[in-house]
Amino acid sequence: MTSTQLGNSRSATISAAVAHMLAWTAFLGIILWPCAYRGESVTPFNPQEAGAAAGEPVQLCASFVEVNGLGVLFPLFIPVLLTAVLLFLALTRIQWRVGSTLILWLVVVALLAFCVLASLSFGVLYLPAALASVVAAILYTPRRLS
Picture (tube, rainbow, N blue to C red):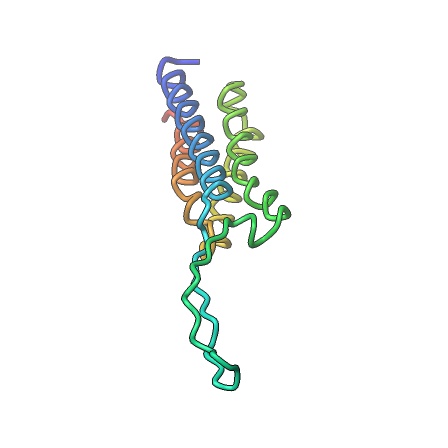
């Protein structure tokens, strides 16, 4: 491995580690954010009831997991798994092979697709991890010398 390849390998490993850390940050932020859903509820005024008065507004606050249930944890964890594969490839330095580079780019495309498909909900929060993964993939891909 030449010094340029070794430098790219280190940079790819650092980018992959940053992507994995960002994916974990987004995952933990989403599941631990106590007020992901906010709302307000007011009891309506009913003139037929004796002494009825309009209710005071009640603030509602719920986490993403409270609203969607525990089943949402797996889809939220997919980017963490994808960046773990990326980091594994970068750390083991099984690079400069067509198979590992192909797997790497498939992981990056899957992560970007996840961000797009979930963009109306939480996918945007994983976008920094996806962009760091793209950088890692670019650095990981071997260059042909002419």
